[in-house]
Image (cartoon, rainbow, N blue to C red; front, side, top):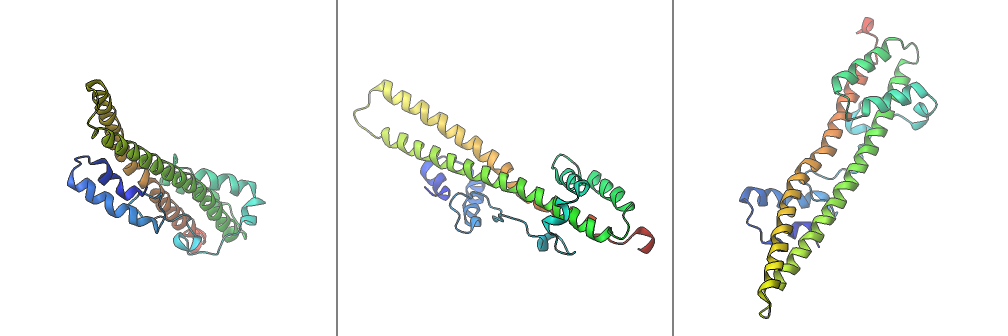
Length: 208
């Protein structure tokens, strides 16, 4: 079941703004049935999208433990960009002839970690979307069952309670989905900010 049909299936009286915002969200997946977000699905951030320096190669940080550790640290969402910039600046201060190469490696490592984090988030969002589709199907089945003429009062009451509960869960999850959909974009912004900060340090302060 396509996520874009969820609201039609549920028949929930949601605010018009909420429904209109949800409709284009499902077109942003580029044909990916499980992508429910209004934000365009970008499975992976390429260096060229957020970085104007040399293309980093994994071998550059795989043989440099300090760069690998620092790159993972500054990529972590729990660290503010401001603190990450300070750490990068301190690291750059003591670099000599290998300055450009090691800073390139640092960016490459940070982007690698960010891409892994984004991939995990995107997979989680898709799982979330599939659960929503499953819940919508269950609501559809319950609504269809309520149309039967031979239902006892007790059975009708049970079905109505189940329908009310499932609709409430669906609406609550939709609010959560808005937050979830923002996370990959925030990581893309983080990659861009780190790329700009690291690239600005290619030349020592005395030469700038």
